[in-house]
Structures are given as C-alpha cells and as structure tokens.
Image (cartoon, rainbow, N blue to C red):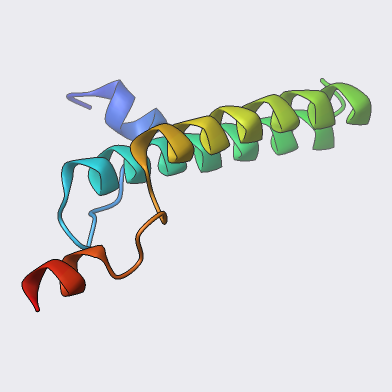
Length: 85
C-alpha cells in the first residue's frame, strides 16, 4: 500500500459548486464524519464512555459550525445568481 493515510482517511470527490470556501468546508465536513465514525466505533467497543463520546462529538460539531461561519457558507444562498442578473 503506497499511502496509508489514503486508506485510513479516505476522501470523496466533491461534486458541488466549485468555490474555495465550499472545497474547504467539504474537506472539514469529511474529516468531521470520519472522526465521528471513529468515536462511535470506540464507544461501541467499550473503549470510550457514552458521556466522553458525546463530549468529543459535541466539540467536533462546534468546530464544524465555526468553520462554516468563518467561511460564510450559506449566508447568501442566491449571491451568485443576483450578481449575474
């Protein structure tokens, strides 16, 4: 296997509107999903308590929300269409 990180942290192709902020948010969203999956598996196998898992996921969610806000995702849903009209 040439690159272990591709195996452990797979990335899916982005099919949405190609803007830098969308690409960055998509990468953050994929990382969030991957980490939540790991936490859920650790909790399922008894390595983390439900309370600790919830705390970790809540922190990851706050980071994702902050990322969304900083990138301005969803603030102007028709911004591109209005500027082209």
